[in-house]
Structures are given as C-alpha cells and as structure tokens.
Length: 281
Image (tube, rainbow, N blue to C red):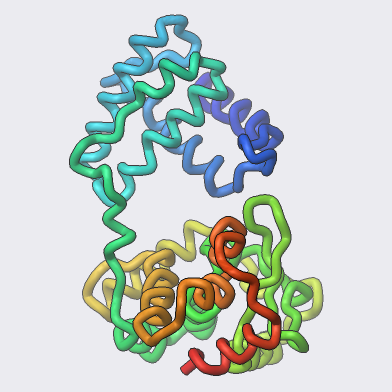
C-alpha cells in the first residue's frame, strides 16, 4: 500500500511538473515512468527505498534493475534509463549523480527504429482485419500518423471534415494533423454507421494499452509476427521517402513533431493538399 501511495503522489505531482521546455509531460510518459518505478520498488530482489539518502546505493540498484530488464525486454529497455533519470529529478537528486544511470551497451540503439514492414504487409493487415474500428485505427496510424495515446481521446468534434484535419494534443499543444480525402471519407462513414454525435468519442472504451494489445494481436494473427502502433507509422514514413517524398514533405504530411517541422522549410496548405493527393494510394 505504501508503494501505491508513493506512486499516486508521484503521478499527482508530476502532472503539474513541466519539462525543461516548459511543456507538460504526456499522460503516457507519466504512466510509463510510474509503471517501472513501482515495479522496482515492489521487487524484493532489489530493496529500493525512495526515501534513502544514499544516492550512490540507489543508482547502483537502478542500474542493476535496468540491466535485468534489458535481458528480458530488449525492445523497451533503451527508454528505461530515461524514465529513471526523470524519476530521480523528481526526487531532487544531484544532476551529476543522475547522469550515472547507464544505458546497457547491448541496446544503445533503439531496435524499433529499424523494424518496419512493407506497405503490402500493412495493406494485408487492413484487408484481413474484421473489426471496423481496428481497421480505422490502423489507417489513422498509417495515413494519419497519429500516436496511439491520441487515438482514444478523439471526439467527432475534433475532426474537421471540411478542411481534412484531425485536432489532437501533442506535447501540451493542440495541433491539426492533415488527412487525405480517402481517410476523411472513412472517418465520415464510420461516424455515420456508429451513429456518433458531435461530442462522442470516436472510439469509446478504448485506452492506449488496449490499442497496443489489439495491434500486437492482429500482427501475430495476420502477419505471423508482432507489431506495435509506432512501427505502422514508421513504415508509412519510410514508404513516403522511398517513393520520392523529401524529408520536408514527409514532415509536413505527417506532422510527426513540432521540432521536426520547424527544422524544415514551411510548406503551404495548398502544397500539403497536393502532397496528400499524390502520396495517398
């Protein structure tokens, strides 16, 4: 129970703690940090005490925990050091000690960045998925370049059918992500078939975890290999670039992040629509 109280306080405090940029941390990031911190504290093998004043001992325990996790889950272990650095900053530990949290040598690179699928495989996934909401989620990840935490929060009112945009929150800022005419029509048909009203959630009852679980299950069933939502979007980005789209065009079409877009020349709304029409098959 004490661990649960500690984690609840951490979540409550952290929701109002801004990043260095001044923007708030995303809900999914807070949940991920909380999950691994709770896992460490509850694991009797490590005896981690958040209230200890022995920061050297705490660092040593965290590094052993990270190494242990990396052996079991190489596909997620690269982000765990970042989670614990964030947590130690919350505990107000010295920055020179926080930097001693290590990334295991085996996983200094993120293997997910290299793991993508062919467009044919993604189309096979869409074609053989029976649940209409799952098909639409895959299309939003692939053609809309939405992130999995954004999808459960979409309301009908967030979709601008006239101008072809979906408004979502990203890094604490509300932005409009461009969608092509085909995806716009798919969303309209889904809304009509489900009799959704303006203030209704497009996917009521779904959470970020449920989306991850369903995508993974579909990948195993249809493609005979695991797949996660991020890999669908990365596949789309690589497909665009393989078909001749420049980095600035891809950034404009996918709105991957404010940082990405700001690093390339601005593209007009007219040019965006031309690109969406050109590259949406």
